Image (cartoon, rainbow, N blue to C red; front, side, top):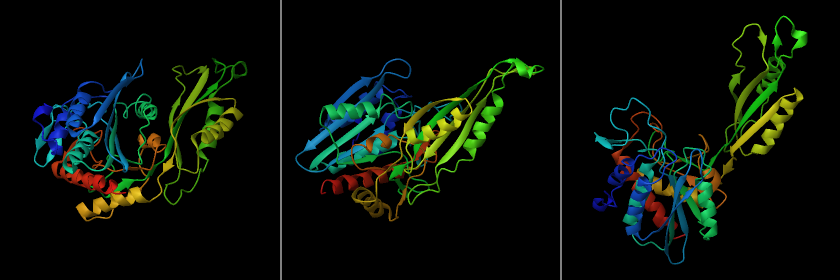
Amino acid sequence: MTDALDLKDPVTLAEALIACPSVTPATGAVFDCLEAMLAPLGFTVMRFLDGDGENAPVENLLAVRRNGAGTHLAFAGHVDVVPPGEGWTGDPFAPRRHGDLLYGRGAVDMKGSVAAFVAAVARAGDLPGTVSLIITGDEEGDAIHGTRALMAHMAERDVKPDLCLVGEPTSVNRLGDMIKIGRRGSVNMWIEVAGTQGHVAYPHLARNPIPPLVRILTAIEAIDLDQGTDWFQPSNIEITDVTVGNPATNVIPAKASARISIRFNDLHTGQGLVERIRAVVEAEGGTLRAQISGEAFLTQPGPLSTLIGDAIRAETGIETELSTSGGTSDARFLCALCPVVEFGLLNATMHKLDEAVALSDLEQLASIYGRILTSASTI
């Protein structure tokens, strides 16, 4: 299919990628398709599988094109998608143009952005410096065998970008109205309180785990982590599950459990929050298990955000908002390499039925990415 593609046309490139089903963990055809686009543009394409067992293996792609000394700009993203679900108007993996929209799973999140960047590279020609693409098949999943594995692969080959643009869908009402210069961190915690099962008529022979769990959750709910910062909204703790699993009306249960999720700004670390909650839990005889999905990070406004903002203004006439809102992305890992900013399509339909992108947005995004490429090569 890629033999007949116009590499400068982001719409047809997006259609080709959407036509490759790639629910997480993605492997195979979608990477074949992307490699076929990049090879004619002078990229050295490296692909590898990582992980085994559940949600694995994951395929990853690193493509690098060097053209003498100069800035190394990396574009990072993913070609895996969430499951389409039931109720689509058409086949979610059969791209369909209707009116001024292109429909298909991944149109917005984020095969459209990948296509726009490839088209931008094709249009820009041989710019000085280095351009790379860091593309995973595991962003929508556990993110264990994806971007972090790619970063290890890059370190082994001494591939280190100076600037990184992540193509996640950041725009809200109009293309370019928002870019992300940081993200809050995320940690999930599982709380369990053990008791002694017994008959409700003989409470002295049992130990009910529910009252201490309630006290734990009450204490957690009373915690005020912070009031936010100049760039971040306040951190928040949310109770996301409470489970006893007791079908009987006359039995004191043997255990009670709960789950909380914390999204936190750069005033905290994931481990620091785990220890703070652990002290509350253990004071009531409970146990805690935690998983830190990512730390908060901030790329201070500077050359990269200015470069992107200037390109957006030149193509759209609007002033972009610098934001740290929303969920996590793989930028939480990539920030260890270099300054990272996220900018991509409108996020209104991502993960929804009949996900769609405006054809004009794909064209305009390719133009903005082209300006970013050209400007980065002169830094």
